[in-house]
Image (cartoon, rainbow, N blue to C red; front, side, top):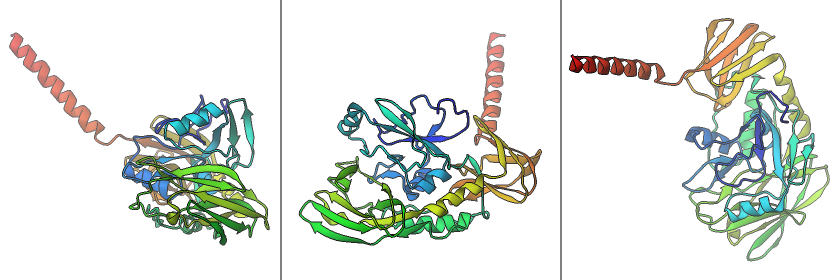
Length: 370
């Protein structure tokens, strides 16, 4: 928690406004900042994080994506406010809210108060981790009408050699009226259950959509004007053979044709081996350093790829590249200390130009004075 000095990311199940990370004094980073590029927003959205379903777009946490994706991006803590005033404030502010206060974090409550719970995931990967190969060929295109579970299966197979992380679950529509659809799902394998609504972003969704599981409200999706959201929704963790009822309530009932999938627990646990061999990770502004104890590793730094990043191993330059469809990759074939630095594009040229301008200005002042 607040005594955790490592680098990590946090999320919150509610949001007071569009740029509120709700960090509550924690040391990590939120999953979203307004300054991020469209490319980064598309990447997060394609991985299942909530995105605005309109011409105004950004990605937000809102209970996260899947547990596996959260771990890849270093999401160590989730803050789940449970105070009714906080929850009401998100609704009145036309921002997203999630009623479920138990995110898909297996360790459970880390801190507890009258206002919020904080959940911790010991299985999350650090900011630097290994992959099975360079994973250069993974392409993550954002299209809200796509099946994200198919995309994520390819992601984990190509990047980590883990096949079929997600298994789609058949659902039966058992009840329908003018404003709701209810589905029954037979859980074919125990694990985290998710749903997603593939809807073309050109289809304007005018009305909010309430999602409930076994009669309990989970989240509210979409909404009026530019406030609509769409993303992977966590429905809960269930044992094999369980039947669950999922209800969608909306006036735009014709747009509701959900996909359901279960996350394989055994395969999810395999991700932990990819943090082996990396020690003493330090993050300081535009500098990242760590000790590498193994050889011939393909490494990932879970920051957006940018050619302005440079990397060295034991003082010798190594090449960086885009990996896992959008993150920073480094191939380091020896043991030692790795240093990364982000060099702001155009900074040196700007300094030179500014210096020359100052010198010329001073010369002009001196000349006038003489």
